[in-house]
Each structure stands twice: as C-alpha cells, then as structure tokens.
Amino acid sequence: METKYLPFEGEVEKIDGQISELIEYGKQKGISYSSEIDKLITKRRGILKNIYSNLFAWDTVQVARHPQRPILEDYINLMVHDFEEMHGDRLYGDDRALIGGLGRIGREKVMIVGHNKGRAKDLEKMAGENMEEKMRYIAGCPNPEGFRKANRLMRYAEKFGIPIVTLIDTPGAYPGIGAEERGQASAIAENLRYMARARVPIVSVVIGEGGSGGALGIGVANYFGALEYSYYSVISPEGCAAILWRNGNEKEEAAETLKLTARGGYELGAIDEVIREPLGGAHRNLRETIIEVKRYILQAIGKLKNMKGEKLVEHRHKMINRRASGTRD
Image 1 (cartoon, rainbow, N blue to C red):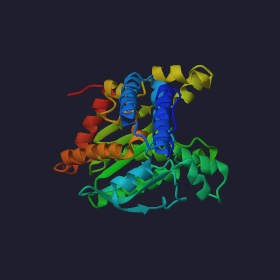
Image 2: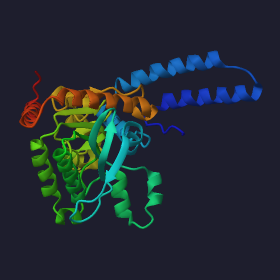
Image 3: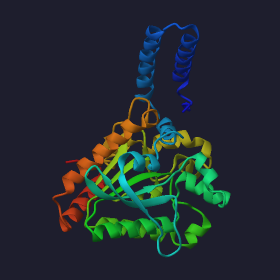
Image 4: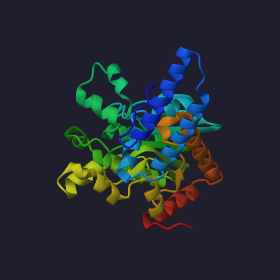
C-alpha cells in the first residue's frame, strides 16, 4: 500500500522516493545498491525520530486521523479471536458507527465495544445509504442507538462476569437533529452512570481520536490508556476554534490550548498510561501497534482479575477521582 504522507513529512517522502528509485534502478541494471539504501534508511530513521519527538498538538491530531492508521476492524482482525458481533439497541436500530461483541484477547474472554470508523473504500459497500449516513459511519460518530447498544452489551457482559474492553476512536457523538430528537445526551449520560457502577473490569484505550461525549460515552474505566499519537479532548480543535474565535482556521492554536495529546493528558492525570507507537506512528506498523495495545489490555485485566463486585467499583471510582484531580499515587 502506498504511504500517504502528512504535511510535515516532506523530507521522509523525499528519501522514500530515493530508496524506491534505487531499488527500481538496481532491478533494471542488475546492480545492488544495498549500501546506499542502508544509509538512506538510517538517515530516514533519524529524521522520523526528530519529527515525531517534536510534534505540535495539531500535528498529533493529523497523525491520529491518518487514513492508514489502524482502526477497530484491524484490532478485531489481529487481536481478537472468535469475535461474534452483536447487533441493535432493541429500541430503534443498529448503529454501525459503534459496534461490539464477544471475543478473546489472549486467553481472556472479553466484551469488545468500539467506534467503527471504516475507511473510504467502505463507502462502496453502502450503496443503499444516503451520503449523510455514509459520512457519519466513516467518521465513527455514534447516534444514541449506538450508545444504547453499547450499554446493552456491557450489561450482558456484567451478567456473565466478562471483562469489558472499549476502543475509542471518534471526533465526537453525532450532532444531527435526529440524534438529539432520539435522546443523544441521555444515552451518553446513562452509559456514564452505568459504567461507573458495573461490577466487572473495564479497560479503555484511545486508539485514534478521543473527542467529546462520543469518547466519554464508552470511556469510564478502571484503567484508561491512550496510544502515543492519539488525542483525548472535551472538543475537537475545529469545534473549539469555531466557538472561541468564530473561526475554524484557528484549529492549530486551539489544539495547543486544549493540551489534547496523549502526553498532555498523561501530564494532566487524565490518562493512566501512554502506549508506545512505532517510529513514525501507528500507520507505519499496524501489527506492532496492536501488539502494544494488546499488552496493555491484558496487563490491566490481570491487575483486576482478583477484584470482585464492589472492590472493582471502588477501584474505578478511585481512578476516576484521581484522573479528575490530576493526582497520581
């Protein structure tokens, strides 16, 4: 797959072009340019390390939104065994922007709930839908029936003592009139109330975007991690800029002000652990990224396995209060 470069990756794109030219020229002439290629690869690693060690907040948002970044489908395919999707909220419909089901991570049976962003190619599979529905699904913005479905699946998990794992990747809950008419705010609020009291382990990971109530609606957890180049924020940078400056073009300043990066969230105490990404971001090595997320999830579940009932709830409340106050112990 051809790599899509971000605006600040011009030097990397140039070197990748040189490497490709040497490989192609070597094939044509029957000559090995391995030493020249090795030097370029070493130079490329140094440049990537320098770039990704000095990202601005808006740069991080762009990495989190990269079209080749691993999405929920990738995590299910590479991390979850025997996944069985469960559909519908039993009230209105089945929201594809937020999906869930039973499966196994390692030896642990879990209920997976996550934002289903999809990719541009998935539009072709939705011939019968209108464009608004297609774009909402591709963006991973749930309607209230998505949150109600998540609530139903989590209650099912609690009934059978199954840990809950949520994977967060959304710019926010869908803000359409229909969503508000069907109770968007109350659906999110009910999830917050329920997850605070659930008597099974809950582990949440921000794998890309973690925006507003759309993220929080499945993000009340005993342990809350975030990938290194993800972001977690009360509002998207564009939304913040539109409110504060009446101009969405101020998104870069808004991103810096919000301190929305995973590192910023960790420093504020809102995130328990920053999960390392491969050099140059998750989109450059999907498997390595997913292995790191799997490690975090299994370690978190392992810490919670011996806690039962009220002990789990007490632990979750302690962690929620710690994140809210920004303290660590």
